[in-house]
Amino acid sequence: VQLVESGGGLVQPGGSLELSCAASGIIFSINAMGWYRQAPGKERELVATITSGGKPNFADSVKGRFTISRNNRKRTVALQMNSLKPEDTAVYYCHTEISGTSHWGQGTQVTVSS
Image 1 (cartoon, rainbow, N blue to C red):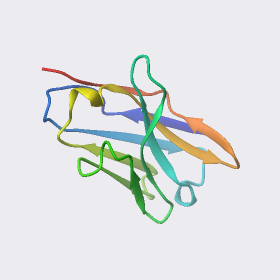
Image 2 (cartoon, rainbow, N blue to C red):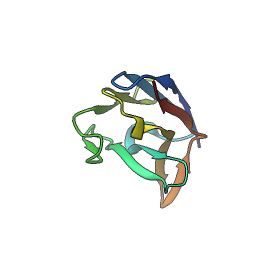
Image 3 (cartoon, rainbow, N blue to C red):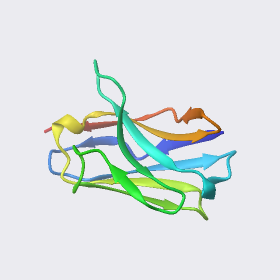
């Protein structure tokens, strides 16, 4: 199983970024996918998930600002982040769980700063 994130970077407050995760080694279409983040000195936290059927779920802190989508043909899951705040600064990780085992990408840094 390989999950590879891309799209992180530096953005000003109020700006937007889109993260993408490319998956391989799994039957992508039947797996729920998720995005987590970890800020310095804090625990990793859930940002958003999307079921195999496309139903999204979001942390309260990002509701109304972030959207999650998946493309089963391309085996990708995207996280569109709008109205970014400095507190969104973190390393963002792609995640899936297969037969009770968690699989993580290497992470991509998102920094929101003026």
